[in-house]
Image (cartoon, rainbow, N blue to C red; front, side):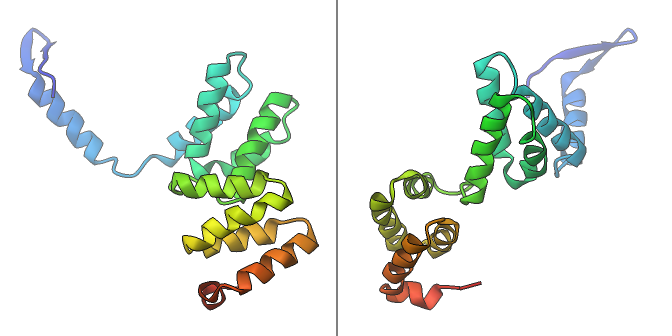
Length: 172
């Protein structure tokens, strides 16, 4: 703690007293204030339309870092008349839909994005890498989200050839 002196009505009080009081106040706030979080999320949503690129980028990153707690505000912002806001919001919501959330390892995020963003003929390698890592929940989500029914069947056939996948696959 930094040592400062505070003058209070002519007397000098050691900074350790002030620091101890602040420390005690912080201990009492072990869980984040839901109202403050909602306000921060609302501020970040508003900043998505900022004329400054860096502010928009920081706001996007902050909203993604809030994870599913930001989802309701993002869904509202998806109706914005500002094209930039809509694009940024849709990008974040798309990540959430595919399971790209805070806490997911970076290499797994890269595999999910590779699958999601690749042309159909290049999706299987990403799926294979996920299977090698036993990431069957992610694979299940990716298969469910695949809009092409024929490709979805091909991916399921591939997946059912992996004994570990058959053991862990949950059709619900």
